[in-house]
Amino acid sequence: MLFDFAAMPARERYKLLVSTVVPRPIAWIVSQDRQGHLNAAPFSFFNAFAGDPPVVGIGISSHEPGRPKDTRRNIRETGQFVVNLVSQEMAEAMNVTAIEFEPGVNELAEAGLTTATCVHVDLPRIAESPVSMECELMQIVDLGLQSGLVLGRVLAMHIRDEAVIDPAKYYIDTPGLKLIGRMHGSGWYARTSDLFEMPRIPRANWKLRGNTASAT
Ligand SMILES: Cc1cc2nc3c(=O)[nH]c(=O)nc-3n(C[C@H](O)[C@H](O)[C@H](O)COP(=O)(O)O)c2cc1C
Image 1 (cartoon, rainbow, N blue to C red):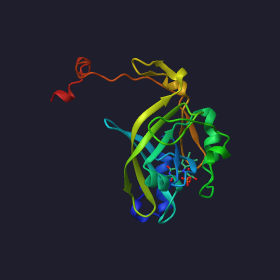
Image 2: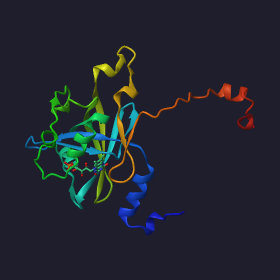
Image 3: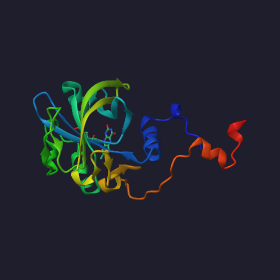
Image 4: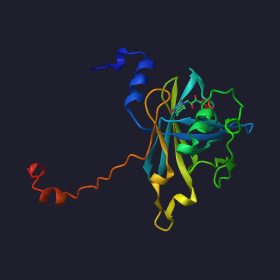
């Protein structure tokens, strides 16, 4: 079935995107306003976009046209934020921080979370989170009146000790992080425990298998 986005209301376009682009990792962002009020909220229009420089991006919408969500406003004002990743155990606390509290409310306190220090940014990270990235704002790409894409450079990463297999080789126990992803609708999530392995195929091996189409 064809869905022509030009002929559809914005809400329905959103529904199709979030029902199909899954699972999406969740950036649980800690930011701070100019007065020093801490803020935390989850965002699943999120991914890593480059390794060099190390760049993450988050699509953050507005409460109404021209009134960006607190996280985007804070990041624009201070140029700093922390992306914490969400493990299975933290799912419910993450959901509490998504409540649209009035500006100035500390969602971390509301969710009973504790904080730990960062080294490069003047912000705390979520201590219960297995992975936290200290980020500085590179650019906010304006996506019209409703949204903005925040691009941040990762300055440092904190990873729970038990999940680091070999620090010299930077080997991480990724399944052990038990991270969750966001699925369809407003309340479905995925665990990252249903895995399969598929090594890359070197070109020579592909040809040895008798596949000749690429040789023509
Ligand atoms: C799992 C999850 C993912 C979310 N992803 C996004 C997102 O990608 N972009 C967005 O604008 N809001 C997203 N939200 C909604 C925000 O978290 C919510 O509006 C929050 O109150 C914003 O907080 P703030 O105004 O303190 O920044 C998401 C909510 C949940 C529960």
